Length: 108
Image 1 (cartoon, rainbow, N blue to C red):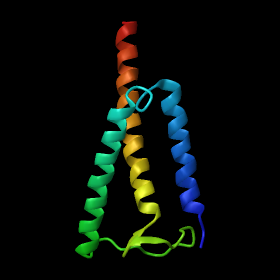
Image 2 (cartoon, rainbow, N blue to C red):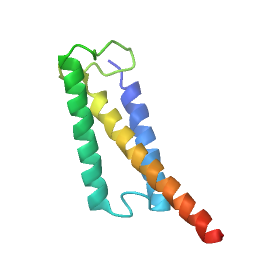
Image 3 (cartoon, one colour):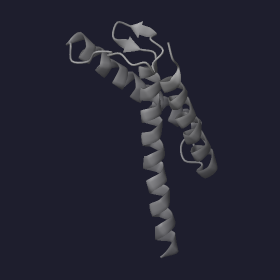
Image 4 (tube, rainbow, N blue to C red):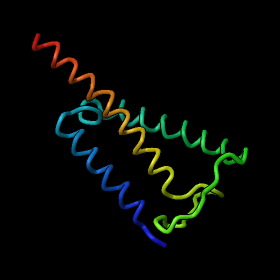
C-alpha cells in the first residue's frame, strides 16, 4: 500500500489553492458558487465513472503507487480526489484565462 499518487494529488491541489488565493480566481472570488460548481462537477464525473464501471468500460487496474482502498468496486479512493482536482483545475484555467484577457483588454 502506497500513498504516493494520493500525496501527489494533494500537493498539486494545494498548489491550485495557492494560485487561486494569489489571483482570487475561484474560491476567493465567490466561495459559495465555486463550491456548488465543484460539487456538481464532481457528482457528474462520479456518475460517469459509475456508469462506466457498470458497463465494464472502466476498471481499477493495479499500481504500486495507489493506496489499494476502494470506495466501491472498481472505484479507488484516489478517483474522487482526482476528479475534484480536475474540476478545480478547469475552474482556475477558465477564470485565469478570463482574467488575463480582461487585463489585456484594459491595457488597450
